[in-house]
Image (cartoon, rainbow, N blue to C red; front, side, top):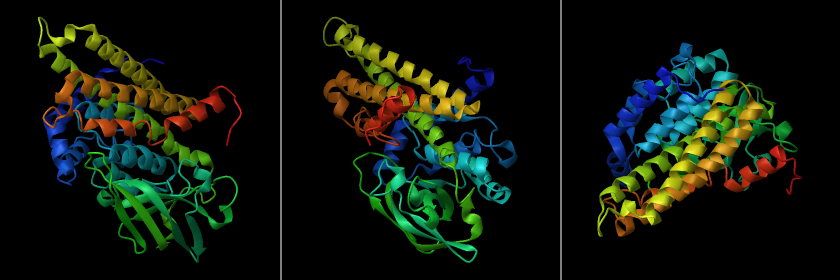
Length: 385
């Protein structure tokens, strides 16, 4: 296993960084505060092949893997314009459909996901289930050859931007016992599906929604994979979700460190710039080390996943998500502290990242659930729940 990037990977990283820098945090924040979407950025990223870099070439993708898609996510976040739907549309949904979808489903959805003309949201979390996916109550029942889907979801990203939602439910026959997920692609204009926006304190152009499914009628071909799917079918998308969450947090940490170091190199109130003082230089150096360590685990997770080691990737992906979330929060906090009062102004563009960085410790899986996973699967400790 080598983490030395190939010439092609290095060129991809440079190309994404250049494109993202041409938009930058000012564009991102302006859109977010105006209640608008980063449509231009998303469209250009799609046309350049960045969004679908992990998807099969035969369906318009780049034919690469999660390593390359996580690079795209990291560089966009490092430029101050991370797109949350990169985690959802190509990483989770694109991966699941590419692995388990029918030929018709692949032809219908993957080319649009790859070039960004189709955005697909992902709905798993429920109000009364939270992190316990085994308590999912969204239910699909048969009515002739059709499916009838009923239930509610919460904290669903970007439904207002999406043309479809991949909904995780269960069949009537699997309402009790261990989760046997049934996954359905639901176009957002389907009768019976509605949503309401959740007001968040995060400055982001991508919104969160509560989703309602009121006897939504779907054709037989809306089902992705098996109606009695193994849990592996769902986790084919959740490992990439954790890798991409780590990539976003790593990029955000880099963004914060860059902001802070640029400032402390030139800010001078005594004989030397304040960056010469160890009270500032040492914490920033520690932030840099921790972000780089998290990045290495992210690269390991992506490499294992692309190599087909799903179990090894699960452990590494969770570790990467944990490490990146912790390191990012610390880096953003230290960046604000390094700028002093300026760190809390709109002008310097770092205060808005405070709440966004906190998300990295909560979603798509909380730090506590990651620690549970590592304790139980890596250390063999007994479950407490």
